[in-house]
Image 1: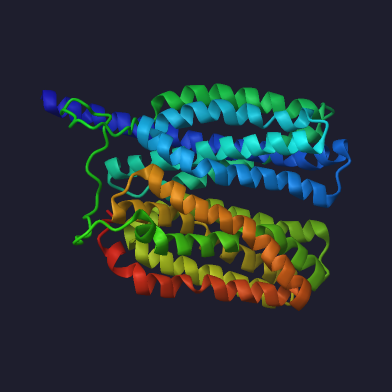
Image 2: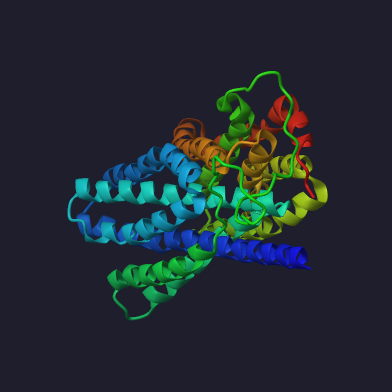
Amino acid sequence: MHKSQQVRSMISQHAIAHNRCRGIFFLHGAGFASWVPHIPLVQEKLGLNHENLGLALLAAAIGVIAAMPFSARFSNRFGSNIVVKFSGLLFFPSLVAPLFMTTLPTLAATLFVMGFCAALMDIAMNANGVSLERIRGKSILSGLHGFWSLGGFCGAGFATLWFALPLSKTVHLPVSVIMLLATHWYLQRGLLSDRVHPATSGPDNISQPASPPYKQPKTGTERPIFWLLLPFGICAFIGQFGEGVITDWVTVLMIRALDTPVSVAAAGFAFYSAAMAITRLSGDWLVMQLGRAPVLIASCGLATTGYLIIALSPHYLISWLGCFIAGTGLAVILPLLISSAAASTGKSGGTVVATIAAIGYTALMAGPPVIGAVGERYGLINAFLLVAGFLSLIIPVYLTSMRKRLKTVRNS
């Protein structure tokens, strides 16, 4: 009876940890969405042109890349839950700092710090999700990313409501940060403790992750982590490249190619965002029912099809459909790859997430300017057709280097 009670207690704790992790993802997405509406206000306050604003925002991207190795090491050494705790205490206040800067260098410095803290928290919470997925023995990472999307929707909605009321726009972000910080302090205390101790833990140490639900591929020698994760990273790069392009360019394409009004074109991105959220929230169920490999292939096919529809659409209604299909396809690629890489390689969550996230964020940054240059020379329609072909490369990468390894992963 005592053992049965202990098992029930462990299951209850893991369920609580899962809900708390969902909440952390939600808060991270809400924090980003709360900051985004203030970008044009900061630009206007400092009198920045588009080029200077782009340089300032690039500092945030550099901060993201700079944080990757630190977050992996910290998560592996201290536990991802500890890194989530302290990085959140830094990240949310960092959202407010740019509002009070008076020069371009100081703005860039605060945005670098924001990007650095955001990435610390992002990698740690994904690593915690990987550990939780292992110990629960089922796919949950796609659903966690779905809660990030929901957080973004709610954060943007709250900002829209605040801006519509006769309230100070400058006060919105400090008020939001106070609420986010208070909620973060409550949620982080229930996260799974996944610190790897050198000594073998006893049976009473229920916070230690159980054996992961996969079989390690048997090889004669230990392969370097880079080569183990390379095919997953390539697919992550392709998928995130597609996300970055559609986020920054689909509205412009609809306006220029179809002479669509701005408000109508913006609805296309709304359809894309809705598809992302819906698919991510149902992605874990799809993986459990169909398996990781079929979901990855189907996602690739849908993303490619969506891009083709957007590029060749004769009417904005068809473009909306293409946006929804593309969002459905792109939604689960990154969380599925992180989960699959962690399961098939047996590496720690922090290491896997940092490696793949670094490649993915690089693609997010590289995609929009590359396609902007291609679009300037050959037209945006041809640029979107090029991305459609690029997305289709996920399938040959899977067939040549990932098929056997994904078979070692237990999906249910």
